[in-house]
Length: 88
Image 1 (spheres, rainbow, N blue to C red):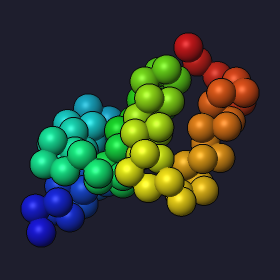
Image 2 (cartoon, rainbow, N blue to C red):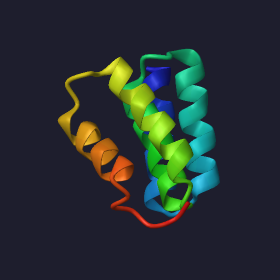
Image 3 (cartoon, rainbow, N blue to C red):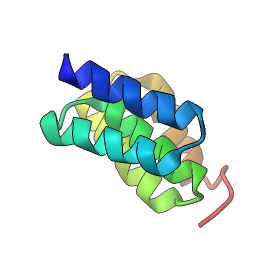
Image 4 (cartoon, rainbow, N blue to C red):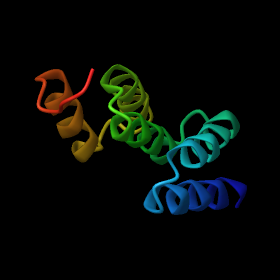
């Protein structure tokens, strides 16, 4: 239950534009469970929102390791690698 509540907290922060709080909560979730792919994806989303493509790519890849069937994340990774997003 703690997993879900941390993820809910992280998602609420992200939706409100509080990237630091969102990433902090998501990082607490992955500390409890390295296989929490939704939390890894949220960390990556925060990285991407800040324009940090390199960190976003690393975190999306961690999400894919935990959930290889996540086609949405696979597409995001492809777009990142091909330079479809701006930033660094």
